[in-house]
Amino acid sequence: MSEISVLIVNWNACAYLRDCLKSIRQTSAGRVREIIVVDNASTDGSLEMVAREFPEVEVVRLAENLGFARGNNAALKLASGAYFALINSDVVVHPGCFAQLSGFLASHPRVGLVGPKVLGRDGDVQQTCGRLPNVWNTVCRFAALDKVFPRWPLFSGFQTRHWDHDRSAEVEMLSGCFWVARRTAVEQVGELDDSFFFYAEDMDWCKRFLNAGWKLVYVPQATATHFGGGSSSSAPLRYSVEMLRANLLYWKKYYGNLGRSVFYVLAILQHFMRFVARGLLNIIGIARSLESKQKLREHMVCLRWLVTGKGV
Image (cartoon, rainbow, N blue to C red):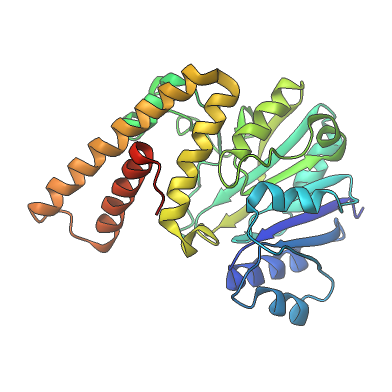
């Protein structure tokens, strides 16, 4: 029964990691074989907390922050389970989650990757499954058409707001915040592409699973809560730039230099238009909240990086 290896990459998310490990301890129900935490050179006491409160957890200490993909690959090399649960440090696992996901994989041999229904801190369903990016759905996302017409499949972008998230569905993409992968599928597909430092490695892995003939399935009978920002909140502007960098890499990998150029132009247009819109709203006094000012700065930083290549 203990067929799942749980793999967690942590970077300065001590409080979130504690809650995550507590939830795994409480909900494993004999399904979890081992827990491996890879720490990306945290300085917030994460390692000391794990050693003190969770002595059963195996810890891999990295000398520097090598990112999400390399961190998980380090854990994959040590994992011995039939299934690999890759879980963000800011996720809390709900009772029955592991049993549902591993049971689904056991009864569906052509499914290589599954993900649960994920709730946010507010209890609302997060959009953790959907479509892989193409030019049209990227335009819909950047132009916010997916929010204006959320129930229209044509305009729904990467996400699937138009269908019932209480039923299982075969999908093109599952968010990397919580995956369970079949060992034999991973052995065929390969590890995460460590060219991606943070972000887009989930899109890349999902595409490679599909290209290898494996199915990806959203399983809402399994649930978890994803608080978001466990690591990225430590440096939000840096991670906004890393998201752009990762997406440019993804588009070049699968669509060549032309595809990369298309995404590059769309990204510049998106950040320029939103920077101007938020700036005008701020000037006239409509959008002066701390969140709005942070978004304004984010668009400015992303534009600067896209145009000059200079980081935060």
